[in-house]
Each structure stands twice: as C-alpha cells, then as structure tokens.
Image (tube, rainbow, N blue to C red):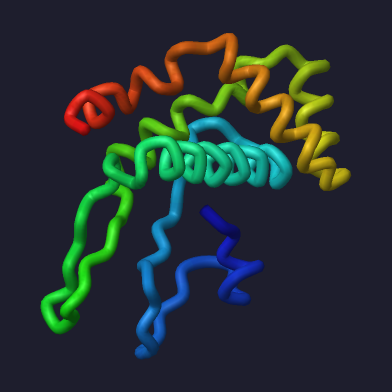
Length: 138
C-alpha cells in the first residue's frame, strides 16, 4: 500500500501506456482520516502483509498468470485486502494511545512502531482468525 503522490507523482489515479506490475486501487474510508492516520493504516497493512507472507510462504495469495507470460505471480485479492485493513485498530484506540502511535510514525521510530504492533497483535487473536481458512488448507 502506498501514496499515489509519493510513488507516481500524481494526486489521484494515474494511467499510462507503460507496463506496471500492479494497477493502483484507490481506497475510500467512511471516516475522515488525517494524512498520518492514512499512513498508519498503510504501514499496518504492509507490515502485516509481509508478516503473513513470511509465515505462510505467500500461500494465502492468489496465483495469477498473464496470458503472454511464461511465469506466474502471486497477488492479493480485494477481499483479503479488506480483511487485512479491517484488523487495523486505529479507530478503536483511545485518544492518548492513538496520539502515541501516530507520533512513533511521524518521528520515523520504526522499531518502536513495530514493537507496538507486535504487542497489540499478541493480545488480539482476531488478526489471524481472518486468514485461518487459508492456513488450514496448507
């Protein structure tokens, strides 16, 4: 998950004739989120996606083969994207905890942020329950 402006240099959707490995998808949230809250959700998503990839060897991802290619790739489906984002606790945190977490991100204290996420996940079982069906198929 990334910000369009940072990666592609545009404010919204960007199209070109060039080949990109992925098509950007815009996400819309019901709640109005600050830029730093959006960045935290992106960080949460990317952190946990990498964690799932490592633990399950990407078996939860869909296999995709472009018709003109001889190789296959693994991609994540929209339902899994939604499920992973839904595990983000940002809106459930009290004001002080949210402020503390966003400060870690703003100050680029990545080690502290990772430690906070791991601490949070160790107390919440719902994270891995969302992906349990894929895990049992392994």
